Amino acid sequence: MEQGLLDSVWVLLSSFLVFFMHAGFALVESGFCRKKNAVMVLLKNVAVVGIGSIVFYAIGCGVMFGSGNPFMGTSGFMPNGSEENVGTLPVFVFLFFQLVFAATACTIVSGAIAERARLGTFFAFCAAAVAFIYPVVGHWVWGGGWLSTMGFKDFAGSTVVHAVGGGMALAGAIAVGPRLGKYDEKGQSRPMPAHNFPLAALGVLVLWLGWFGFNGGSTVSAADPSAIGRIVLVTNLAASAGFLVGLAWAKLRFKTLDLSMALNGALAGLVGITAGCDVIGPGWSVIVGSIAAILCIETVLFLDKRKIDDPVGAVAVHGACGIFGTLAVGLFGTDIGLFTGGGAAQLGTQAIGTLAGFGFAFATGGAVWYALKLLPGGIRVSEAHELEGLDVTECGAAAYHEDDASMGELSPAPAE
Image (cartoon, rainbow, N blue to C red; front, side):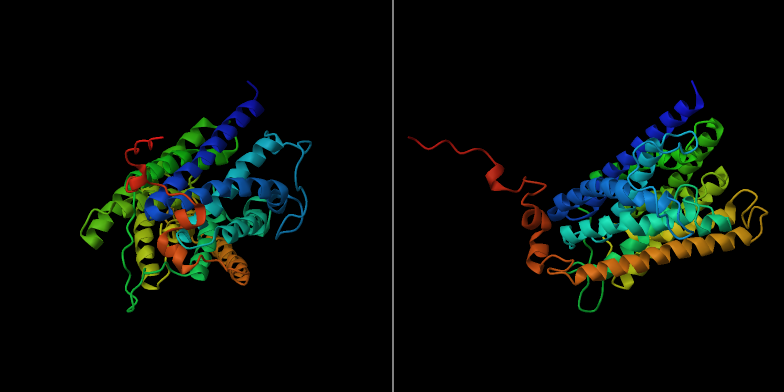
């Protein structure tokens, strides 16, 4: 079998795994939110795929990978298949792989603004993010832009996908404001517990599985099975360490085995290893996952003290751990890390790149959110709709009917 065919099969299989991650995000976010908003959360997660697919094909792919300047691409919009292969991959195979990554960055934003944001303005934000914010940073790193020429390394997207998604999510959470009743008159946080832990746990396992395609597929080649095996192994080890350390750290901090923190610890480990999964060894990957889990939990607490309401911990998991994961390349990367004999040079480059990516996403994302806030209706649903729940008031349907008397035994038909 020729190499081009093998590479295409591997990248397409990885693409399908990354696409399936949207099912994981939908399960995690709906499970972590209250049941009165589950339908709205699911609607947003499916819609992101549709919006992201069309906008990235039409605009984002050209901004990210087109020729232009060190800041952004200005060509290659709406490819028709006649373009040159990308390495051994037909252009449409490469495009589909990149397209599912782009949609993932917007899904991160969905969780941070859940339970109070208007659907229309979220759709508009997704279009702007996939057309410009995400692909600009992607061009800097993967499209031959200024960070790539500096030697910045982000193999599978700790910065390009996760820190960018986290920056946009933080801007959205600040712009939309906290959920009604989340903080009392003294500013103390009130618990708004997850309504369905089975969904959340299943979602994390789906994401964990999908990450093997996310990281492993970023080789964009099947030529070196050993390299793919190493990437998949360190990805799994980091997630495993993240879950276990997250559980232990939650027990230490809260005196209870907090499943939600442990689940986010696993995701934190996955995000943390994403940038350096090609250069960080198995032993160091356990350290990366462990640190990421602790950082995630502490970031959740830090944001909560500042009344930044993030129902699913998206900013902590993707933003904070995306930044850390990018720095981890300069700390633990084989022969280039500070602790592996490489000195501090790569760490400095990593710091510049990840702070630039996060900062750009936060600033431009904030500008878009506040521009949308000026539109009629703003970016937030009415108080009445938020209190009643967005499923019924905005979507006209409830996720669960077990408490609805109308769903009980059918009454006999009236006599003629």
